[in-house]
Length: 406
Image (tube, rainbow, N blue to C red; front, side, top):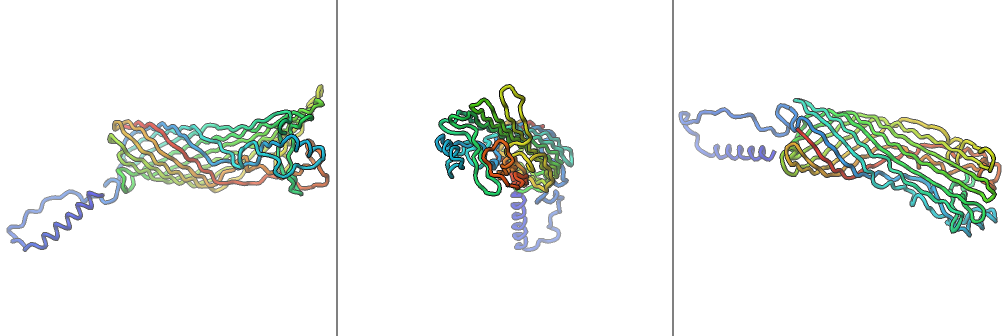
């Protein structure tokens, strides 16, 4: 473009200088020579053909992070003296006496995902085809605390439906029971794309392609709770909750990819932006159980845990309109016209996902819960109950890749 502007300015200057000179005799006029085609002021190529390599393949290591998961306290601790006093007086714990042990805050951080991304493509004369695959393998965060109730008791927190009283359900108590809670929370993501590339207008780039294609993205997450209390008399109580969610996005997308120095030796730049519109299929499965164990007797097992019971038990599904936006910036270095390394940054946003921590209803009618003692009778509220609490999700991180092209 810079050359076109300079040529145009030179043309106008020449024309003005010529108009200032006296007209020449007809016999002295120069013979008109053939000139080439007019400079291209905006299109990728005059004939709209594909430019760049004919074949390429990318192998990428991705160090990414995702939005933390909102979740209630899954494991708490209570000082032994306070727990003993509350049990002996048959009262609830004083406000603020229960301390969160896992997760460390109301938002559970998964940390870094060590993922991979691969791309293969081919250019024909007028269009190109490209396939892309992204995988962030499972990351699991675990909280695990078991003891004999000293120096703290291990507890699980919920709210009593109807009174909104905060209850800490003790798993261990000094002199009465040993036990604790284990919680595992996991997350995994993968996706695939199939795109058609078409030549587009260049703006401050050497090559620009438009992208039209189909996209799939899947997020699977799971939250489990295992609680055990071994009473001094020899009996045991085991309570389990499991909440799994799956989000599957299907849609079409449009995008642009611009490159500077994509093939010549040296430093270059590559950026891609894509917007996908479609449907996300959201699924939540809640299951649970509780069991009483006595020496020499068969386990007395009942369906339903603490959070997964009643109206919050089973599989729930729905379809929602959703959007995905992705932006990538890579700095490239070409060793030769066929080999390239790059480092960069990517961000992906999806407008709606359902996650396990947000599927937990902390309000529980514990009058019918057999492993909770000293509960007032007469509560008829149907709690816990399942509700959709979807939020958006961000994924972002660093890219380190290698590219072969021909």
